[in-house]
Length: 444
Image (cartoon, rainbow, N blue to C red):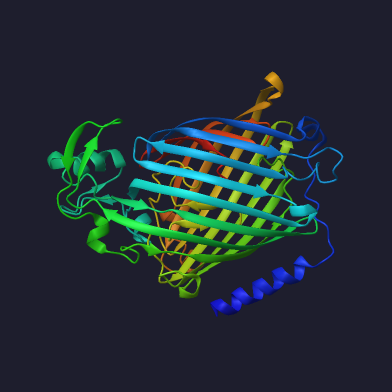
């Protein structure tokens, strides 16, 4: 069945590739078009980042763009013709994420777009709170006494830090995950796009069982986690790591007026991922993800953005892959973290099937243009919600509305030369609060 689906989508992709339609993206507003730069230009900045999950981040990201000429018919519609960046990034919490990314639109004037990414990632303290519907049904619990906690702060002080921090890494493990990915998109007409992609990823897992660690932003007092962690206790699928390669296929309807920072339009996408031995993977599974995003500007300077999402995985799925919402353009960890539920820790709620809804209000308060560098400033208010389920049909047959987890908050977004989006979010939930300083809107 999986191979048949892959064949059908591949055949559809090949047929449409030889059609005569020319791609024309949805047009920008006249006001935004007048501000758009021509030709080649760099942007880049030191990365000073903070996340409640990973600590204080530092590094550098350098962008290079080519917007082409105003005489090009696609100048008014394509966000850019080329975007490439290199990044070095590390945090005091032990997360490394180094990347070279290339995004090329209208290859040789055609309807094709390709994204290529080379990544080295290592998380010293990746989160594991278990899997399944129970992650949203049940509160944080001390496994030794059965005591339940309403907030992460109480859970941390009552259990994780107790007895000289001997169970401090109970919900953590170390993952090393270098990867290479290539996605090829084909634009059909004004609004449709198709995807074929492939990712190679090698996973190494190292639990914190009986390992030493230090407490402090830049090191400090040394402690030892005594005995097993939750991950090594349950030993889920993927506990031994290995090659996790997959192919991606999908399609989208996209009427957004400007991809990095839309004001109006809708974006509906479906992506299907398949992993098996023929692709060099040690696991056999597949995933379907559906997303809807809508953007409306009811009056000048205000944009209302909304997202609905559903994802389901089936088969021999490694635990570290279950947490993804694998959208057509981006794959985001959830539920929890600055891309999904912004008031919870990353991967706080994970299951075979997950749902999510978000709404944002973005209001532009002003802009400046020093040295031909355009900066637009927007204040943000948001609300996020989501739930975890064991089976694909459960969100419809047994939605468990009372188990939905909700976060809310606000922040600031800076759009640099329109394409480079920098956000500062502060999210709150019943369990804790979280801060994120990073790139891109969460909903895009």
